[in-house]
Length: 229
Image (cartoon, rainbow, N blue to C red):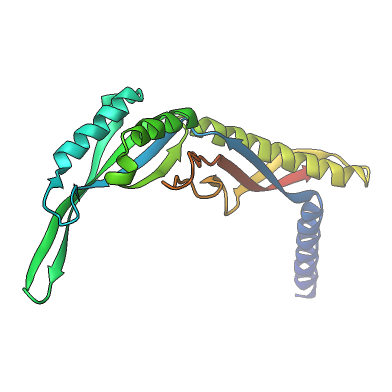
């Protein structure tokens, strides 16, 4: 019985020693890569509403007329029909409490327009301004979203660079004690990895042709475990 107990203790001791030795032969480091890219597809949102040409709201410019003007301006600016889609449609009205009726009814609509560069945005703005559409009908003009058609390729590149960064950090640490990096044993993606826009993207009607296009940032962070040679 004593011999069995001794053997059991010896086996457990050796097991713990082996685990410690294995742990000592690995190094855990984090790696990071950041890539900034300019979007090659920019989605503009144009909101426009019916308006009255007279102070007493006698003559209303219809949404159909306004939309035709905007579409014509977009065509002059070089935007293709396939890049223009209809967004929301809203009925705007005011409630007269004394008469208990709704007055000043007017329609508001939204267009989503895809362009490919800040130069095209400026071109669209110039044409719309030439027709005084910002002063009359357009209530909001902003960049709704941006994207890059090759985003996945940039994300793959960022992942590779993050792992390379982790290996370089491990080599730097181990070189100080005369060791080298061995095989990679584990890679774990850390939170915060992905693609984001660096800041808000917008155009204010009063901002003197500031296109406001922000860069897209691809960030990838990893935690890696390497063997120590």
